[in-house]
Image (cartoon, rainbow, N blue to C red; front, side, top):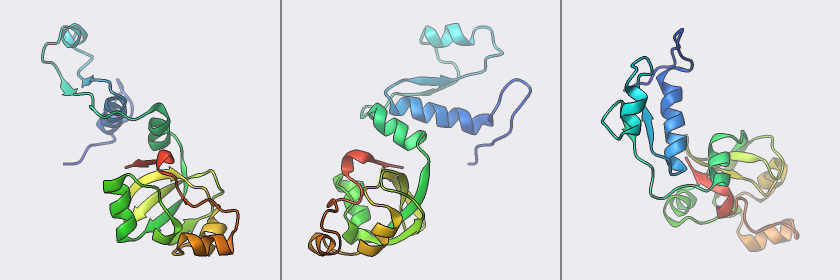
Amino acid sequence: MSIGHETSPLGSGGMRSKVVAAEMATAGGIETVICNGLHAEALSAVLDGRRHGTRFPAREARYSSFKLWLKYAKPAHGTVVIDDGAARALREGGTSLLPVGITDVRGDFDAGDAVQVAHGAVVIGKGICNYAAPELRRVRGLKSAAVREVMPRATEEAIHRDYFVLA
């Protein structure tokens, strides 16, 4: 099913923008309802708990405000492509991304910029990178000891787990 981008004289952004807004709110632990505002009883029905519109329950495991900002508001300035092991570790283990798991660095970004993290052609998350793109290209695929030989003052993590959010 495809969600449209069309607007109308009464609204903007189409249904897609409303569903994205609902996703953001539920990720922050807020139950959300999308309903027709042209119906006079819509708001009172929702507030009374009656079934009206489409309800999105709040997620049990909510994101921190920082991770909500990172996921939805912070623009990405490049892409870091990772191997199978790194993808599994990020998805299942909640670990940090180390240079050894990086196979490609795309774009031009500075240390502290947000980057997309992709496994093949699929973006799996976004994080704040501890390296500038040229530095990361020099150490991608290297184990931590080898990274320290190339860049003695470099941090071990390319993206620390506290600064990473799954897509």
